Length: 302
Image (cartoon, rainbow, N blue to C red; front, side, top):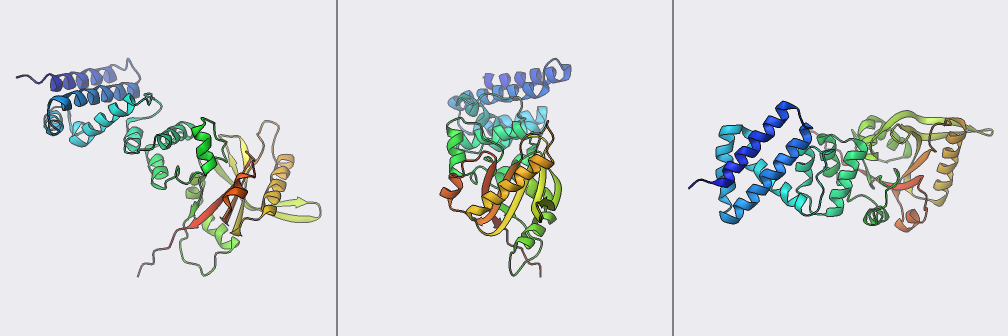
């Protein structure tokens, strides 16, 4: 008896490949649609046969069309069909590689969060994998998650996860502010990626002349996506209320002396050893956030 499900999957692959070759359609959209349709047919076949049917189809399809249609990918396609059927719109700003990383996630709000930052930060597959691996969504503040549930658009600083993971290249007896600055500088790219997309380095211990006193911003960054400067203050101790005032002073100085008329107001990030979540919540400032840091242990090589 002829297996119509397998024949339909074959036709879907042949037609999809033909569309890509002809370049009559957006390639990514064609691939996503094709994978959804294959997943649909696999789900239908599963109702008539046992689970072993996917393995059987994979064996035949890989011979004919290559390793992209092995058992693992076919299972992803079936998951993809179920994912779309649950109400997630097919979004051609995401690639198949993006979707494969999202499909194992169970929390709907977590999936929505990662989809939003893929589009906001133009994340590659590798960058998304790193964000998921470091549990960026899980490190968002409770009020940031509540905002997402209420379909609020998070400001840049609200979407910064906590804790920020610092990765020293060697062990230190005491982690002073100077030490923390150096750890960040040694791993600057990794640090800026944790903050989100679009950051670039301006300076360390950036000098400000406020009255007759010299002040120093721990780090000054620029976010080219948000078109604004970013003041970063690092505290090796717990958060104190005057840290907020100090950071705002530095932000105001940058706005007055460095920002141009075409740039947006400066944002601020206070990185501290610990902060009472209620104190952080009642700051109520879309321009400033307070996050904790965590030191990754150094693995000593003998």
